[in-house]
Amino acid sequence: MTPRQHVDRVSAEDMMSLDADIGSAPMQVGAILMLSTEGSEDSAPLLEALARRLGTVPRLRQRLVSVPFGCGRPIWADDSGFDPAHHLGVIACPAPGGEEAVLNIAAEMLAAPLSRDRPLWSAKLITGVSPDLSALVFVFHHVLTDGIGGLAVLEALAAAEAGWDGRREPEIPYSALHLAIDAARSRVNALAGLPAALRTAAAGASELRQTGKPRAARTSLNRPTGPQRTLAVLRCDMEAVRTAAHMQGATVNDLILTAVATALHRLLLARGEYVEEFVISVLFSARRHTTITYLGNRSGIIPVTVPAVGPAKGRVAAVAATMRSVKQRPPGASTAIIGPISRVAAHLGAYRFVIDHQHLVHTFVTNLRGPERALAIAGRPVTGIIPLGAISGNVTVAFAVLSYAGTLTITTIADPGTCPDLTGLRDELSSALEALMVTGPS
Image (tube, helix red, strand yellow):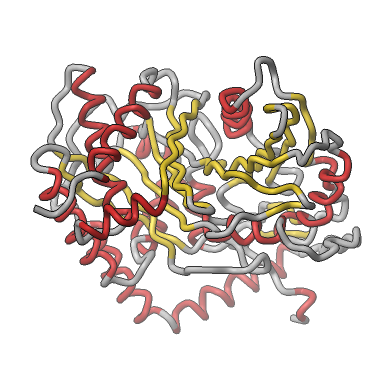
């Protein structure tokens, strides 16, 4: 098999995103980049620069292609008809403008399935957000990459190089026999790594036992979700949060998890429910950095029990101790357990039922460390970044966290049908985080 005939397949981690994409809304994530207009409303130069720079990312020029039965996982194929204009668009911000209008557009993009006939991403430049701001909403299917890969794409957008030259690679036709042989060779090669895989699976089983409980408490947080999404955003000073966390022997992530549990506790109290602790699915990446030539997913999830009542200092300490224990294990090992289970459930046609009725976790929290210095795209300063996460199955609300240029931004995404009180939750989260930031050592 020549290098040109190499079959570029989705990974086992990528398949988890595809398996989960059978719910009421697609498994799509992304980010909103707030851009200074620098006194110019002309969007054409910016769109041209975006097209050149996004085109430098190989995966953004590829389609996901299904293969015949027995021929292995789906493959990535260069889209010979790739045109950035099919993915990039510009719209005027609806009156009265402002961030709320941008969030509404982003929520609609997250909930609208991307066409499988083209590369799985879309971007819209929203003009007139305010007299001096526009916004770029970038949405992609989770199979493309995880959060670390998303940061690599962001770096490509901010790169000073000229970018993509417009050349398109021809699509390589693969016969069913070729694909079947390649899949068989991959399975044989996998046998050589079986001992290491078993060790990883054992570590994954240990990760998934972190809660110490077989099930999370039943609450109204776990209900099958509908097709719509809503977003709410909270911002705070990154250095202030970091200082408060370190004063309590904890990390920024520990403080956020504690605040999330507190906010959920208060939300449920308002609904007439009392829950003392929550099981939060925390995303861990198996890598700290990657490049645009190696995206995909390299992460795992760990369910962590987070107390929601009692003295704040004790709760933060408990979370910090749990997370220190978690970090001693191989990152992402849980995928070795969850991946095969999800594949079997998907093949049996039972995956939708499983995720709609799970009671292992209450919510998801993802936390990424973004660029510490402000970026610019085609001369337009990026004044802020809002992360866009996903919810699936019966998880009605989740949290995406990103630090950028001294600001910590927390985006809460919810299904409006099962979580109509999202604004109240955002306010409770703000209050809980502020209280933890003033809680010092005794």
